[in-house]
Amino acid sequence: MEQLAIESGHLTPKLLNEELKNLKREDATIYVNHFKPVFAQTLLKELREFKRAKKAIALTDGAFISL
Image (cartoon, rainbow, N blue to C red; front, side, top):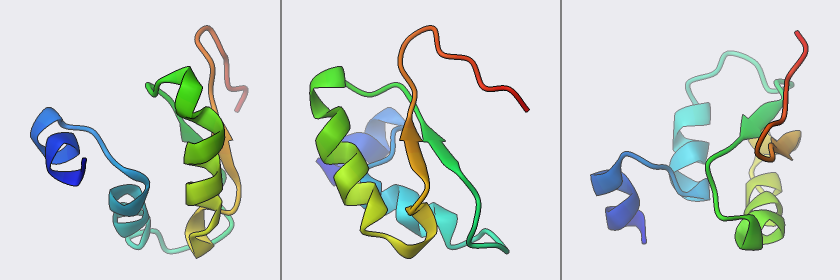
């Protein structure tokens, strides 16, 4: 799956974790989108196992983020 994700410009939880290591802080909320809804719970479980993605939130279609 990892190679397919790379080739298609997507991230797996592992690849996202590698990208998050570039953050200077560890308390950022991570919003994930563009995933198959059937995998939402598995995706969040895997993400939350990583130190920098403890605050991972899966966005649904039509969701808005207020900043």
